[in-house]
Image 1 (cartoon, rainbow, N blue to C red):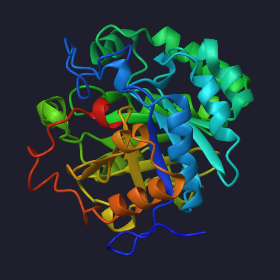
Image 2: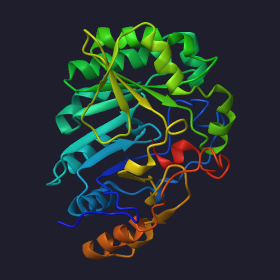
Image 3: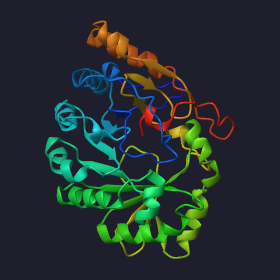
Length: 327
């Protein structure tokens, strides 16, 4: 098996796979409220095309796949895609990022199809504030979805909370207590200047070093670790089972350990969330490329992976919005 090694000697073993750029919410830091520039369905990779690409990645040493969006559950029959991907020999970890609003309907079928764990975006436990952040999302649907995911045996369930000054900074303790009660993992994430929406949210940026200090005044935080392919730095609250992760792309970037690439719904392979380096696989797939040719294209793409993002130095350079890339 060939390992994917980028120009900076980082092994790439993790692909975040966007199955749609559409979402049933409009979180203000992710997607403009009136945005209609979605990719046309004819340009979406089909499930069979996705399976071919992921199988090629697995042959090249990738062992972790995370389904993302937009909101992955708005794509019809996504549980069938999960079943196809779960059957790929050598794929060890198949997970999903979701806003959980549709999980009440899909949690059981996703678990049966092969999703083992989920990350859920949840920035507020107050219904009115949640609706404001998401432009009229319903908190009750998300909480019901989380209950369904827990009942279906998906584990661990990780709550992703974007930390925002003046928006939800007064809810950090409440979210900690909720996750202790539910047996979830909690991760705080810094706002990133991705697209106009991300840059517009820059005034809400909250340095997670300050958030950790704030939590330390209430809890005894002990350095910890959790299995997974992501960049979070974890702490455990003493005398509980709660792990709290801090994802710090701005205050303390983790580019030197980056092990991932992103495949968008149109087949574009993005090599860095904070740069525009990419390679489109869809034209090659639809021109009848062989499996070996496809693997060579992936290797060619990995050679384009930059050393690091430049969120601080050049916050304006990424023009695509988050949902176009995949979470």
